[in-house]
Length: 114
Image 1 (tube, rainbow, N blue to C red):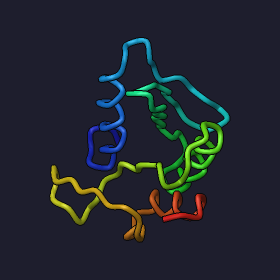
Image 2 (image 1 turned 90 degrees about the vertical axis):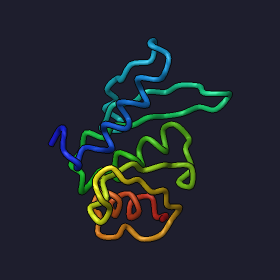
Image 3 (image 1 turned 30 degrees about the vertical axis):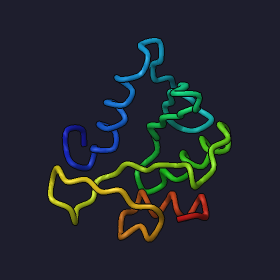
């Protein structure tokens, strides 16, 4: 579903990765079922994750990466499409329901955190 609004999360991650040091490249991590980049930004470790599981179960990948890299649920930022918003509009939300988004629901369920 590349180049559709359903792939906006991957496009944002790609743009973020492009701004990192060129030495940082995506690498496959079978343990987390995805591709990761780990980088230091202003004394903070940042882990970018591109899950390779189906969207409806991508919470498994997110939880595995969180455990492996020591990331707390409250420090995870999910980037996803939102069909209720006009194309090109963005919003930030801290906590709450998945609002019908199966990928977000998967993360909430597996992490046991909203």
